[in-house]
Length: 116
Image 1 (cartoon, helix red, strand yellow):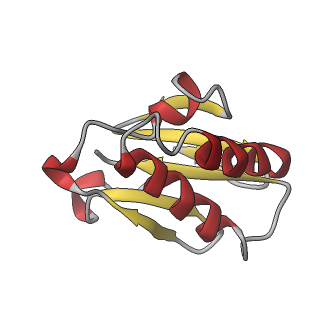
Image 2: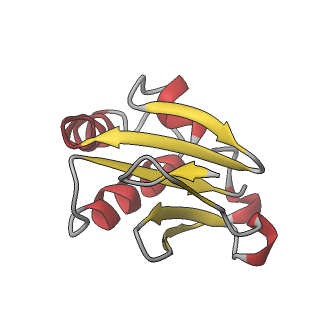
């Protein structure tokens, strides 16, 4: 269960019912913003919080959840650009996909889920 923009809870779909990737939580559904590259590198959503120090990462059932404010999304863009040669290319691409996916989403804070 994850909180939506109100105080009620809604059930998450099973992670294995979706392709492996990162999903933006919207009021209607989960929207895939990044497809996992598989064996191309060792990276994950937790790296945004642990390596880059941006956002809040926790586990929601079988999903990994990242919560980002609009200001943290701006920080993520700066960090992805600044560290593009220091971290795996797949991690930087995931960060850029998150930023692109968030650009049209409403709200002051956004939630992303991953199943890899």
